[in-house]
Image (cartoon, rainbow, N blue to C red):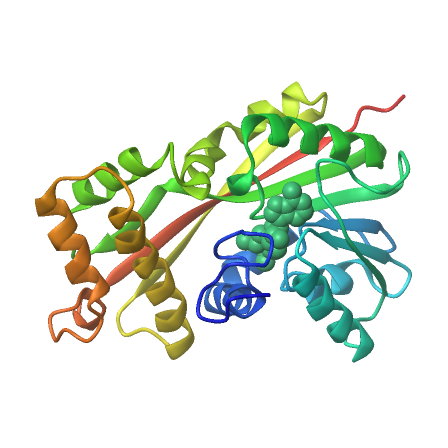
Length: 282
Ligand SMILES: C[S@@+](CC[C@H](N)C(=O)[O-])C[C@H]1O[C@@H](n2cnc3c(N)ncnc32)[C@H](O)[C@@H]1O
């Protein structure tokens, strides 16, 4: 069962529950839309939304492929697929959408089936072996000349202020071997190399920056609070000085009148990369 007090799915992935994903998508919508539009998805295409979560990207994917297109949406968490099924039942999409529960490291689709694979915010959860397997699967299911597009956040770009940035670096360094999304988020900039190693060609990438400054909209405040909260939570489980722990506990106290979210100069940024590669023509 999903824990509704956390952002974790029944399959154990943090920051993957659909209401959290919706709040993230809404808070950063212009940047997310720019990311997906940068891929070059064409009308009539057959798309795989690999690791679709609660379906945040589906409305724009469906708009891009239009009524002649088709989307397959797959995810490991059954409750996320149920959520997508309910969206589809409510006929919110211009194209046909087929859903499946499944693992991206072993896809239940035949070779060359898709014009493009879109995969957002998944690589952070995968070990190196799983990432290699997943990219090999993407290569297999995309047609010759088709595209593989992988979007991920880049942890090295994360920043919130006013806050001692070296605290954040020390936390990421201490946490990277214990908390998979932190380790995965530090690997993001290498993804273009991973796509080339998977046999894809014409690999390129584009970076995107999402910045938010005070005053925040309620949806931005809700999303950014969840991200800030994840830091003191991580700090409790890794090896840090007591001095650093005390500061992180202070960040967890959102009711404090001195909390940084109430600061008139509050600033938050996160970085993203969209890497696109092409399957070679036979
Ligand atoms: C952060 S969410 C991203 C969802 C969506 N792509 C988005 O950006 O809104 C991560 C998703 O990856 C799924 N996931 C993680 N590992 C997976 C795997 N090996 N196979 C399929 N889905 C996986 C989780 O169930 C979760 O829905």
